[in-house]
Length: 517
Image (cartoon, rainbow, N blue to C red; front, side, top):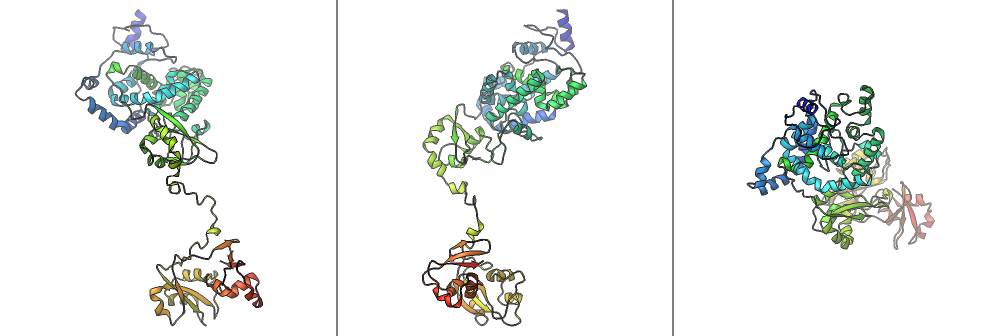
């Protein structure tokens, strides 16, 4: 009894001692020098997570205002260290739970300074803990490990640290990929509570195979096995967490105490007059397999479920798109009461504005097949007049463009001029001007008709990037075909297709002619 009294005094504990139970040697760490402050980054994690759910808390507080619960919530009880020790021992944890000043600081952080945040996390735990426990039990691992996401992310499923760790279990990108989590432009399974939990349990199991001690595993989960191995070497090969404590990174020193404090707070919140804030997450959910790409909006426009609800329980789909298809299926989680409606209406859901959400017209795009989809006249808007100008001696392309007040680049485009823009006397050049201004150019060029940008271009088949095939229609001749292509003459068509003067009259409907574009 005297030994117990001395130990309690060293810890700054009341001489009343421990109310019940016994204290093992492994449970107590008596160094008075263990007074590290709580890292700012840890407090920031709790606060940032709470910000996301603060509106729910305010609504709950308004509901219970001026009631017995609210009055109790405002009362913050004080307990001596002996009570904390007794309560930790009473948990009968498979993981050794030590107690010291640092652990007490973290307990007070949760139960005194961050009471509202703890109340919010308690509500979220009712949704997430059953998932964690199921996977842990299936792998014969301590269920107490479910408290790791509490200190990692404050149970915020979309948490993202400044080091870019993501999700409930705060996976870094390399570790996530190592444990087969899919991460791309549309899906990040680090945010998927189910897949991330499975990966985290595999990671914890691998760490336990290295250390054989759950406290060291928890430390290694935070700072990586490399830092824990360095701390073990620097301490002379010791493998007790408290023996290597001062050789660990400063932030990791508080990680294990925070874990112990979280476990305490989640089991004894009632004793501290704290009450869970019920989360907006649905209690009952079911899953459907999606085998074709689907947007959340397609679901919400056809069912009475909001995009926010789908995002809350499917945070892995980072752009509201389920990228299924081509033999790959994904799971969509939905509130239980919506699943049957989705199944009954899935055909109309998938079909809803399909081309708006998933336009796959460019999936096998070939620019040659799209050449001159419309007879677009570059550089001129509205109705156009097609003029034909005959090159005279001394003409140069720049002067011709200026004469008709058009861009030199457009003149080149309309007439397929080469890079040097070589022209010859007598050559016919096509020029497009506004139909309203056609009369002012009647003395400079020949009027050849009116066109619009919506005029259908000739239907052609592409040969390669330089030529297309044109199919001759009934009543057409080389001259009428040439007019369909700016800068192309009937002589050009004859040359490209090896047609002599004597064979011109033999052109027949259905014949295919090569046209240089």
